[in-house]
Image (cartoon, rainbow, N blue to C red; front, side):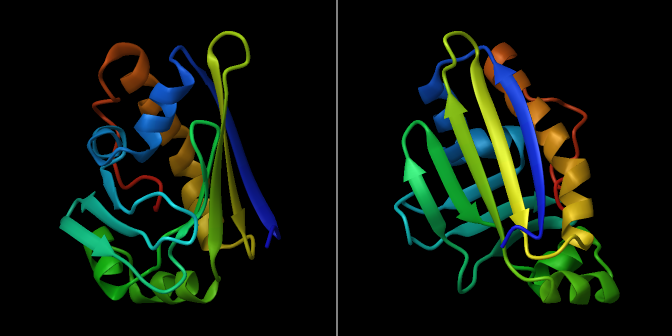
Length: 169
């Protein structure tokens, strides 16, 4: 992997375990992202994404969609979700873009949580097989999502005007 990589870093005034919980607890992720994960967070465990989209809730699961690393509260890695026809329809993704996404290959998301002696340093690294459509889509979405996560942890409220599906479009 690693033909293309997106890296985002933010600092959050919260404890490392609070950041971890915000990344893994379905109730928390649904607030700042609109996604609920169904998994036990053990390496090699499968993951199902339940995502709120402009056209309703869609669940995605598939071979290879799994937890890669889970070292509470420091490091979390998983494969990005599969691009099912149901997901594409719910997101309003046209057939040509859906086909490109399916053929770009797998990607990997890694979060590193570092207490850094003050605010927690949260780094996201999203690795892709190719620098294609998905890289462009999440390149716009991840910064907004991390801002929503930061807002939720620091103020108790995620960003209200954030489109939860922005990480995919």
